[in-house]
Image 1 (cartoon, rainbow, N blue to C red):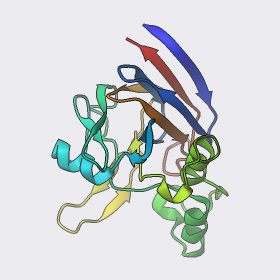
Image 2: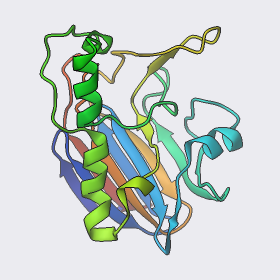
Image 3: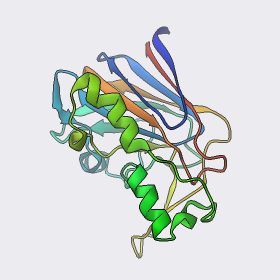
Image 4: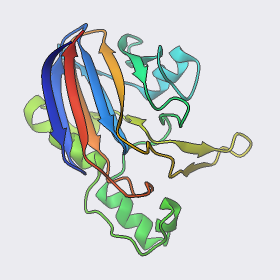
Length: 211
Protein backbone atom coordinates (compact mmCIF):
# COMPACT_ATOMS: atom_id res chain seq x y z
CA UNK A 1 0.00 0.00 0.00
CA UNK A 2 1.06 3.59 -0.60
CA UNK A 3 1.11 5.56 2.66
CA UNK A 4 -0.05 9.17 2.22
CA UNK A 5 0.54 10.20 5.83
CA UNK A 6 1.21 8.45 9.12
CA UNK A 7 0.66 10.46 12.31
CA UNK A 8 1.16 9.86 16.04
CA UNK A 9 -1.63 11.44 18.08
CA UNK A 10 -0.77 11.93 21.78
CA UNK A 11 -3.21 10.90 24.50
CA UNK A 12 -6.11 13.35 25.01
CA UNK A 13 -5.40 15.33 21.85
CA UNK A 14 -7.04 15.78 18.47
CA UNK A 15 -6.07 15.11 14.84
CA UNK A 16 -7.58 16.04 11.50
CA UNK A 17 -6.73 15.68 7.81
CA UNK A 18 -8.22 15.63 4.32
CA UNK A 19 -8.70 12.27 2.60
CA UNK A 20 -9.62 11.59 -1.01
CA UNK A 21 -12.34 9.26 -2.24
CA UNK A 22 -10.96 5.72 -2.44
CA UNK A 23 -8.21 6.29 0.11
CA UNK A 24 -8.31 4.44 3.43
CA UNK A 25 -7.92 5.75 6.96
CA UNK A 26 -6.43 3.28 9.43
CA UNK A 27 -6.91 4.13 13.11
CA UNK A 28 -4.74 2.10 15.47
CA UNK A 29 -5.12 2.19 19.25
CA UNK A 30 -5.96 0.43 22.49
CA UNK A 31 -8.14 3.29 23.71
CA UNK A 32 -11.36 5.01 22.62
CA UNK A 33 -11.18 7.09 19.46
CA UNK A 34 -13.96 9.63 18.94
CA UNK A 35 -14.22 9.88 15.15
CA UNK A 36 -16.14 12.17 12.79
CA UNK A 37 -16.02 13.03 9.09
CA UNK A 38 -17.30 15.89 6.92
CA UNK A 39 -17.68 16.40 3.18
CA UNK A 40 -14.50 18.21 2.09
CA UNK A 41 -16.36 20.26 -0.51
CA UNK A 42 -19.39 21.07 1.65
CA UNK A 43 -18.59 21.06 5.35
CA UNK A 44 -22.27 21.39 6.20
CA UNK A 45 -22.63 17.70 5.25
CA UNK A 46 -21.49 15.77 8.29
CA UNK A 47 -21.50 12.25 9.71
CA UNK A 48 -24.72 11.44 11.53
CA UNK A 49 -25.13 8.78 14.22
CA UNK A 50 -28.87 8.37 13.67
CA UNK A 51 -28.77 8.05 9.87
CA UNK A 52 -25.89 5.58 10.17
CA UNK A 53 -27.95 3.35 12.47
CA UNK A 54 -30.97 3.61 10.18
CA UNK A 55 -29.07 2.73 7.01
CA UNK A 56 -27.08 -0.12 8.57
CA UNK A 57 -30.10 -1.35 10.53
CA UNK A 58 -28.17 -1.83 13.77
CA UNK A 59 -26.74 0.04 16.74
CA UNK A 60 -23.33 -1.64 16.52
CA UNK A 61 -21.47 -1.50 13.23
CA UNK A 62 -18.47 -3.42 11.96
CA UNK A 63 -16.76 -4.54 8.74
CA UNK A 64 -18.96 -3.96 5.72
CA UNK A 65 -21.09 -1.30 7.40
CA UNK A 66 -21.21 2.35 6.39
CA UNK A 67 -20.92 5.78 7.96
CA UNK A 68 -23.75 7.93 6.62
CA UNK A 69 -24.41 11.67 6.55
CA UNK A 70 -27.53 13.55 7.62
CA UNK A 71 -28.26 13.83 3.89
CA UNK A 72 -28.32 10.03 3.61
CA UNK A 73 -25.08 9.82 1.64
CA UNK A 74 -22.51 7.12 2.36
CA UNK A 75 -19.33 8.80 3.58
CA UNK A 76 -17.11 5.87 4.59
CA UNK A 77 -17.20 2.07 4.67
CA UNK A 78 -15.58 -0.04 7.38
CA UNK A 79 -13.36 -2.52 5.51
CA UNK A 80 -11.44 -3.94 8.49
CA UNK A 81 -12.40 -4.25 12.14
CA UNK A 82 -9.90 -5.93 14.45
CA UNK A 83 -12.18 -5.23 17.45
CA UNK A 84 -14.83 -7.65 16.19
CA UNK A 85 -15.17 -10.55 18.60
CA UNK A 86 -13.89 -8.45 21.50
CA UNK A 87 -16.40 -5.61 21.62
CA UNK A 88 -18.52 -3.17 19.65
CA UNK A 89 -18.00 0.46 18.63
CA UNK A 90 -20.43 2.86 20.31
CA UNK A 91 -23.02 4.90 18.42
CA UNK A 92 -24.97 6.11 21.47
CA UNK A 93 -22.74 8.40 23.50
CA UNK A 94 -21.57 11.82 22.39
CA UNK A 95 -18.17 13.23 23.25
CA UNK A 96 -16.62 13.53 26.69
CA UNK A 97 -15.51 17.02 27.74
CA UNK A 98 -13.99 19.00 30.57
CA UNK A 99 -17.41 20.25 31.78
CA UNK A 100 -18.80 16.70 31.58
CA UNK A 101 -16.04 15.37 33.82
CA UNK A 102 -16.43 18.31 36.24
CA UNK A 103 -20.18 17.68 36.53
CA UNK A 104 -19.67 13.96 37.12
CA UNK A 105 -17.20 14.79 39.91
CA UNK A 106 -19.57 17.36 41.47
CA UNK A 107 -22.44 14.86 41.38
CA UNK A 108 -20.33 12.04 42.86
CA UNK A 109 -20.62 9.95 39.71
CA UNK A 110 -17.01 9.40 38.74
CA UNK A 111 -17.40 5.80 39.93
CA UNK A 112 -19.34 5.11 36.73
CA UNK A 113 -15.93 4.96 35.03
CA UNK A 114 -14.99 1.85 37.08
CA UNK A 115 -12.05 3.37 38.98
CA UNK A 116 -14.02 4.99 41.81
CA UNK A 117 -14.27 8.65 42.70
CA UNK A 118 -10.57 9.17 43.48
CA UNK A 119 -9.28 9.56 39.93
CA UNK A 120 -7.75 12.55 38.12
CA UNK A 121 -10.36 14.66 36.38
CA UNK A 122 -9.14 15.91 32.96
CA UNK A 123 -9.71 19.58 32.18
CA UNK A 124 -10.64 18.66 28.59
CA UNK A 125 -11.76 15.69 26.53
CA UNK A 126 -12.86 14.66 23.05
CA UNK A 127 -15.17 17.64 22.56
CA UNK A 128 -12.25 20.02 22.95
CA UNK A 129 -9.89 17.76 20.98
CA UNK A 130 -12.23 17.67 17.98
CA UNK A 131 -12.50 21.46 18.16
CA UNK A 132 -8.69 21.64 17.95
CA UNK A 133 -8.79 19.34 14.91
CA UNK A 134 -11.60 21.08 13.01
CA UNK A 135 -12.34 24.64 14.06
CA UNK A 136 -9.17 26.62 13.35
CA UNK A 137 -8.05 25.01 10.08
CA UNK A 138 -11.43 24.19 8.59
CA UNK A 139 -13.59 26.90 10.13
CA UNK A 140 -16.14 24.43 11.48
CA UNK A 141 -18.22 26.03 14.28
CA UNK A 142 -17.88 23.93 17.42
CA UNK A 143 -21.65 23.54 17.62
CA UNK A 144 -21.57 21.85 14.19
CA UNK A 145 -19.15 19.09 15.20
CA UNK A 146 -21.29 15.95 14.95
CA UNK A 147 -21.72 13.33 17.64
CA UNK A 148 -19.05 10.74 16.85
CA UNK A 149 -18.68 7.06 16.36
CA UNK A 150 -16.74 6.04 19.45
CA UNK A 151 -14.32 3.46 18.10
CA UNK A 152 -13.23 0.80 20.64
CA UNK A 153 -15.78 2.09 23.18
CA UNK A 154 -17.74 -1.00 24.15
CA UNK A 155 -20.79 -0.03 26.22
CA UNK A 156 -23.34 -2.15 28.02
CA UNK A 157 -26.96 -1.58 26.97
CA UNK A 158 -29.92 -2.94 28.92
CA UNK A 159 -32.52 -3.58 26.23
CA UNK A 160 -35.36 -3.68 28.78
CA UNK A 161 -34.68 -0.39 30.57
CA UNK A 162 -32.60 1.41 27.94
CA UNK A 163 -29.82 2.04 30.47
CA UNK A 164 -26.34 2.61 29.00
CA UNK A 165 -23.21 2.10 31.06
CA UNK A 166 -19.48 2.41 30.53
CA UNK A 167 -17.44 -0.76 30.12
CA UNK A 168 -13.69 -1.36 30.61
CA UNK A 169 -13.60 -3.66 27.56
CA UNK A 170 -10.76 -2.41 25.34
CA UNK A 171 -8.17 -3.92 22.99
CA UNK A 172 -5.41 -5.62 25.00
CA UNK A 173 -2.83 -4.43 22.45
CA UNK A 174 -3.02 -1.79 19.70
CA UNK A 175 -5.35 -2.93 16.91
CA UNK A 176 -6.84 -1.14 13.94
CA UNK A 177 -10.00 -0.20 12.12
CA UNK A 178 -9.82 0.68 8.41
CA UNK A 179 -12.37 3.05 6.85
CA UNK A 180 -12.51 3.66 3.10
CA UNK A 181 -13.56 7.14 1.99
CA UNK A 182 -16.57 7.09 -0.34
CA UNK A 183 -16.24 10.83 -1.02
CA UNK A 184 -13.57 13.48 -0.46
CA UNK A 185 -13.62 14.17 3.27
CA UNK A 186 -12.19 15.96 6.22
CA UNK A 187 -11.66 13.34 8.92
CA UNK A 188 -11.01 14.06 12.59
CA UNK A 189 -10.21 11.88 15.58
CA UNK A 190 -9.68 12.34 19.30
CA UNK A 191 -7.45 10.17 21.45
CA UNK A 192 -9.91 9.98 24.33
CA UNK A 193 -8.78 10.36 27.97
CA UNK A 194 -10.86 7.17 28.38
CA UNK A 195 -11.49 7.16 32.13
CA UNK A 196 -13.18 3.73 31.99
CA UNK A 197 -10.23 1.94 30.38
CA UNK A 198 -7.96 -0.23 32.55
CA UNK A 199 -5.00 2.12 31.95
CA UNK A 200 -6.95 5.27 31.02
CA UNK A 201 -6.25 7.10 27.74
CA UNK A 202 -3.45 6.21 25.37
CA UNK A 203 -2.01 7.71 22.17
CA UNK A 204 -3.37 6.66 18.80
CA UNK A 205 -1.99 6.33 15.29
CA UNK A 206 -3.72 7.72 12.20
CA UNK A 207 -2.56 6.44 8.81
CA UNK A 208 -4.00 7.39 5.42
CA UNK A 209 -3.08 5.10 2.56
CA UNK A 210 -3.92 4.37 -1.05
CA UNK A 211 -4.81 0.68 -1.46
